[in-house]
Image (cartoon, rainbow, N blue to C red; front, side, top):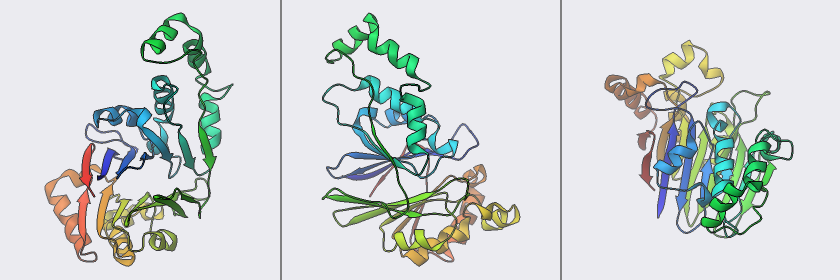
Length: 287
């Protein structure tokens, strides 16, 4: 089974329909992977039918709040619901992924009081034991690493590689990820604007997931092109990389209007002739 679950399909502006960025990748029998953890991602993970304990790998593309704001909630919920049999959590992302994690659940972390109470209170012990836990409740531990472009993780049946995107340097580093598994490949490029490394990494991929902020005319007019891609940009990236399907997220609310959406499809279709999908929250795509 190969599926992409779009948990959050928005941008920094909260709307009733979308907010932030987060995806879950379901590939055959390998552990579930989560990419970014935007606002309310843990709640939307549950709405999609998953428990936080099912996520074994979390990759951050970058550390804007619309991509990481629900990270403390995810960490705490996963720890709280875990038992001694729950697989460990592996977290990778650009600097300061490790520092953020330490400041959340470390010995002096922001949520240390919550953790201390749950590890020591009799009522919390009862809930944990009734769930199947064995006392004492362990301190939360995760395998977290700051990674750089060129990172490679090869687990035999699947592989993850990273490349440098272009977004808001030098203040934030944006990583693009490619996952390969059993002849299938998907690339998460999120907020990058056009540049060589993401195109090279996405070469020949089956699916490219990327931000499309707005129509190219608007992106250029408003100088958003300094940070993100518009309709022509994503089409050129997809065409140059030769990807099979293009999944767009993080776009402005105007794309929800039928006429605007049709225009966007036409603009992209002038350059890229593959399948184009405009992502919605809780959308499930069979891959």
